[in-house]
Image (cartoon, rainbow, N blue to C red; front, side, top):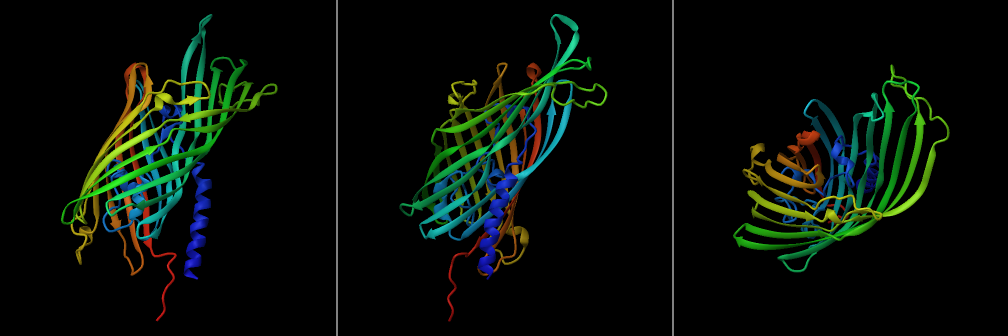
Length: 433
């Protein structure tokens, strides 16, 4: 009966999360470009260590799920469940103004199921990208320098990633794996021109909605070198195959008037003009990541990753929007004072730290939009029983992105991530004496 309840809870949670992920948001003007702010296949335990992942089979004695490198699934010894959420406080600054925003969303729901001692399956749902912005530029009409017009740009939506992966050990030192992912979601963008001094003026708006879906395949390899007793070095590589996503676009143009006192808009004047079901392809580029970790079992771990993505090849239909290739450097680690201590809770806690640099695919007015971040976090073990182990993983990322040069925006942010990890012996038939 208990196992039946577990299975029902698992399936119900997954379907509930599918609906909730559609509400993922951000508040960054830079999410306007490409597919938005890319999330990465990282759980809180990885985020706390700067994002290191491809050279990480597992963390300590716990089975952990690492979708960033499916070769790591071969290290899953117990049925593993991981669920989490994010909260992101962001301050947007220009040379003359600032604005604060708070966004919250689910971050992941993933499962790992061992098949035998050498292999395991993993499946789940992760955010892939987020779009959420609103800003305006004011100007005057060239023919009449006293008439002001506001150009307002906004967007929202995002893409989610549902994946199924398998990893197995070819030998005690070598593991490989692959994920097959389905990317799906909706991106909405709007452009408006509003006359701010004339209540009788006709304002215009164009809204575009894109429904996006398609398959994506990534793969990974991990090789373990046993340096000395209870120490090992793991070298990892992971890549994503370039793919094409389907995009169905609908664009609506309308005109309206606006009350200058209340800000209320009238209904659309006349019938909106709509282009429906215009289809094209989005070219998602190849990505590659290489990394390593050095681990003293149940004591400490340090590592680094370097990743590269060919976003200069990204195309929307036949249009190349001019994105740059991007790369990310991550370094970090974990320290556990004494995982085998018989008392003293803080000796069992995992203390994590890291640094991250990202050269994004965005380049505006000869300015690269770079990101710098400091990360830290905790792995908090909970009371365990004979069959199950529980841990709460908490991470904090403090960083900045962008620049104040040439009228651009600099973002200062603090991002909190919380995850709950369960290791349990599901799917095992008990033996009775």
